[in-house]
Length: 296
Image (tube, rainbow, N blue to C red; front, side, top):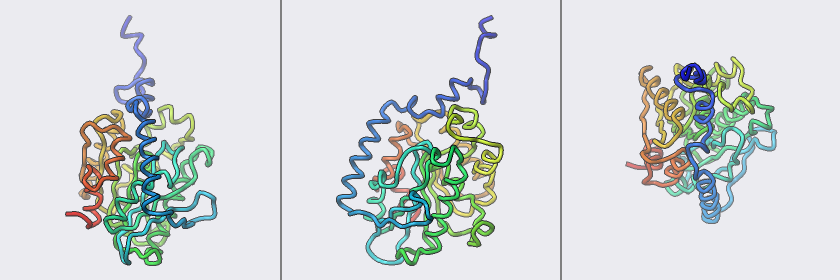
């Protein structure tokens, strides 16, 4: 009788409650608000040191812009950052603290803005197309931003990691008439690379998942289009699904014979791991700079 009363499994060994919790960062990161406030404080300080960024449009919408922070000199590498926020939170200016790492190391940094999912009536397609269009413009017009078009790198965290996975597996030739090698490297961490379990979670309350959404925007299904080396990472205090998603994506990339390094942040939760990107000696800051040729 006791076993008969158990909730049915809806994904792997998880019932609905467990799956919902596995895609709810607040359950596994009780200090979420404190880490957010810390990042906002550090971004404000970084803006004081760096000055306001250039705001460059890549489309006609109010949110179709990116903040460009320039390092000294021309022909510099450039990092494109796609922020997270469960697809529904965050603006580029909130992540200025990350730009300081790259500018001080001699790289430009473009932090993307885009419509949030509630602006798109729950549809992920416009968001991903906006990030693709922004990436294509940056790569095409790199010299006008005093960047080296052969050294453009993409970085994404959380839902930005999901969108970043869609970017690095874009068919650039078919969709934009560009070389499939427009990106030199990518760093994706704490992201989602298979949307089927996400569709079954409570995130479907605000994201309009369809069969097409799941098929087109699950990066693990499009590894054949991946044309740059990846750095992937997750923290040991993240939800079990965010850990599994990263490990399985890494394994699939390696199985396809493509280069990918996996970093595991012992003792870091979903939000704390992002802080290590702002540190040139951090778990993610150093590999990001090394991938760009700015650290040994």
